[in-house]
Image (cartoon, rainbow, N blue to C red):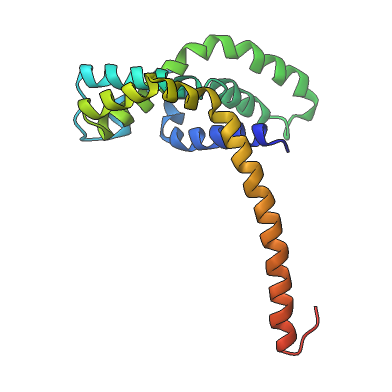
Amino acid sequence: MRLDIAGRLTGVALALAALAGAAPALAQNQPFNMGDAKAGAAAPSPERMKLANELLVANGEATSFDAMIPGIIEQAAGSFVQANPDLIRDLREVAKQLVPQYESRRSEIVQILARTYATAFTDSELEELLTFYRSAVGRKLVENRQKLLDAGLSGIQAWSATFSREMEGRVREEMKKRGFTI
């Protein structure tokens, strides 16, 4: 599997896990109630939410979940394939047909993330983060993030393969000391 696909799938998987509590609302085509996300937590001020939303745009996270709604719809339609394999073409068509109807729900995802940031950071911290992401080096980070992650993952995979071979050799050595040849 290519690294960029793996990275996107990992992102979608993490996003799905983060939104597991939103599934009932999504299934009912009802907007997710932010109060459900953190019962008893005070809502961040509108000013802090505005800063958090600006940060999500500046750091690129506002668009990082763009594939999530189509993915959930495709997964929902795909869940019927095993029981109805003859309907695969129709299920795919239905999924494609539903995507545009639910694209507007993406803002709910962004608002969940904005509230998370608004709860975790003060106004001044959000402003500092915005200053960084609006700076030349911050924009460079956002623009190159995927390339950096891909290169890093590629390096980690190569290291992991080498380390794994090294450990296989060490295990053989230790087993040989115990009288086993593997």
